[in-house]
Image (cartoon, rainbow, N blue to C red; front, side, top):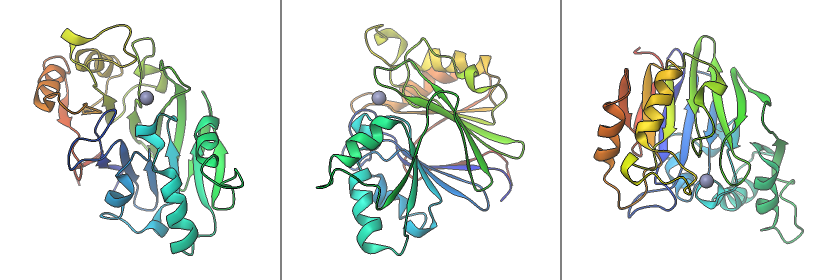
Length: 250
Ligand SMILES: [Zn+2]
């Protein structure tokens, strides 16, 4: 495979619907596997795709529980059931703080090799480069752009309207974007964006493909897809657990 692929490990917004998982994605090049966000349920689904010892790094966008709460369980898996000596975890400082709190000595650093990032940080994981941009969300939250050669995937993480996808550059092959809301129920007090807003942002950022994610239980995903498709000029898809999207067609 050339380029990058994105496999959905879970995509329910806020909490998982029956039989689903919260936010988690596997981003892969032909050499590198990056696990992005550790929402509850994603550890199980990750293992449907790769072995735990094939993960090169875990990247976590923010410390809201639907994006990070599986990390203490992931700690158990690596500590007691794999030969991996240290798993690299790239995240905000608050993700480390809440993960450490689960340990009796207040430190998960014996298993996790923490790399704390913030707005403007860049991390290299194998042949994938990851750039971070702070979004508009109540806690420190990082959107990210994954690049490998000329291919790239942008993940918005969670955001309100006062952050722009273009902060992470133009021309991504895929934007994986939160479309938590529909425009008619978009409310400025809710720190998320509508699918209409997301699609307009994806147009401005000149993305080729938009994958809508983080639809909350109880909201009809097809309505989210429809709203985004009415505005976005490229191809629009709906995230669903197990689906894989690729930056190239081969
Ligand atoms: Zn959040």
